[in-house]
Length: 113
Length: 112
Image (cartoon, rainbow over all chains, first blue to last red):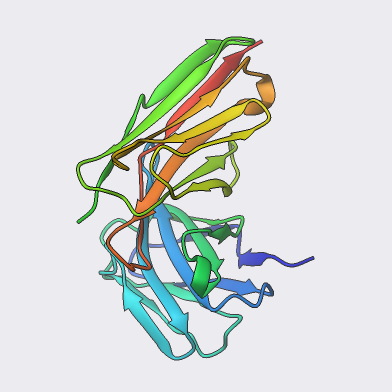
């Protein structure tokens, strides 16, 4: 079955540590996205990528970094520069011609202690 | 940037009652999407509206796009416990943009 796999599902880290969240899709989608969700909030875009080796900042990119070395993979690193990293992180993908129709992964919940 | 305001933030209904959530924008939208997120789950795409005044139905769910393409609504008839979750609207941040702006969502609770 095609879909998006995010790992880990839960992650605990100490302050000051970098953390990398994995996102893999087998939908053959060109575009991939990272969103952050906080309680009672909508989804806010962190980074997105339309093509391999290219990505753009979203609304809240500060303190995050990404790479897109393969079409299937779009890992997100939460760096120590991110002031409030505890959140639910959602990876998504879409076709380029249908970029408003997102398929989401199950999410990764990061807690910084 | 583009903002979409969604109301209400919470709605508690008795099973069998109807439910409506509204999404409003100060600017004209090229299209609008609706997503549902079950408790503990991830958002799932429900529908896309593109045309002015468009109305689409999915069983007990009715989606509308305003004539001016600045507002949209999702109406659920005779709610069931399976309708529980948070409903989000989402619209492109600008013409041709890859960025979707999501509303803050309406959290629906259904009392059996």
